[in-house]
Amino acid sequence: MPLDKTIIALIPARSGSKRVANKNIRPLGGKPLMAWSIKAAQDSGIFERILVSSDSLEYGEIARSYGAEFLHCPLAVAHKDDDADILWVKHALQGMEYNAFAILRPTSPFRTVETIRRAWDTFLAEQPADSLRAVEKVKQHPGKMWV
Image (tube, rainbow, N blue to C red; front, side):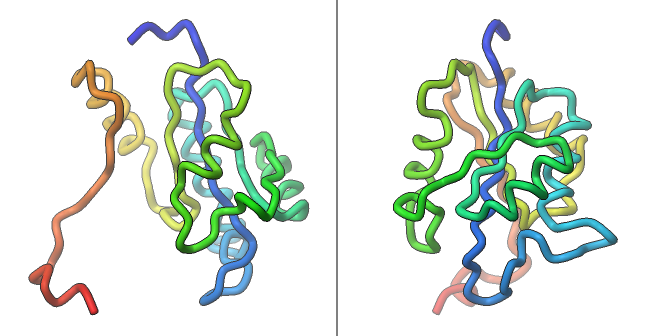
């Protein structure tokens, strides 16, 4: 894949978590949760742009303070629990020129720079792949994971 266009990190940071209020900005190790994903994206060296998409202007200020761009996502496409990612992704990428994008969820704060780079290298090596999804082996029988 030629790298003549932008590779974008998209970080979804909805403010309306039902189980943990404001989880994306709650402190973890002295930083807001979303800051860990921003930092990993920056340190990976892969992304020309790091974009935090949120329905909260407060989250936007925090994202900017850690060096990310902010895109205010209207409530109509604001990452609801049961909405498909495509709604907010299309909104975030509207009008942008890009080769590829990665979704880096704030709820994976222990994702390493090496993991991001390994995923990127795998994606490039598997052309003409158009997507890559990170998964891990389960520790219990899948039948016990669902209600």
